[in-house]
Amino acid sequence: MTAAPIVWTETYSVGIRELDEAHRRLIDLVNVLLTSDGSGNLGMSVQDLLMQTLAHFAFEEAYLNSRYSPITSRHQAEHIRLFAELQVICQRLLKEDGRRLDEAMAAFLRHWMVSHIMAHDKRDSRIMAKAS
Ligand SMILES: [Fe+2]
Ligand SMILES: [Fe+2]
Image (cartoon, rainbow, N blue to C red; front, side, top):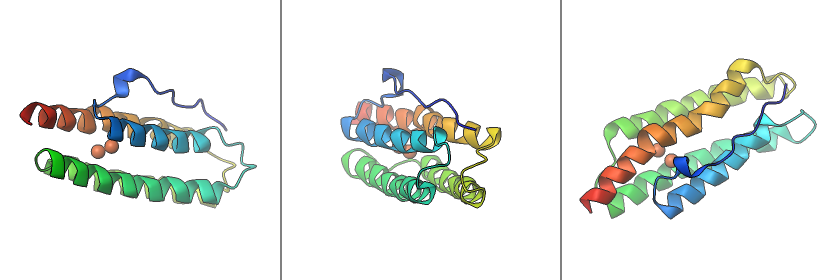
């Protein structure tokens, strides 16, 4: 199955340009998987998403830590949990060769990044921006 892509809206903005740009790039990578009909190079897209996600989490933590105050341990724990979950979904997708993006996978891919941005990135960015 293919699923509708995520459309970026200003409600997803955390108010920090560098982080917004990184989030938009990650959403683009998620959209490649969501809209894949299985004919492209799925392995490459999955690798890309995993590597970019890992890099983003590290960048975001370092960015918030250096410019504001230490990132909350809950936020950091959420990065670790999300990445582990993403790895499982990506492995399942690769096993299925991209032909069977089932609803659970699509739902996870659709919501993991956006929910994380709304629940953690936005809150920490605001708290930190206020405190600076
Ligand atoms: Fe985050
Ligand atoms: Fe983020």
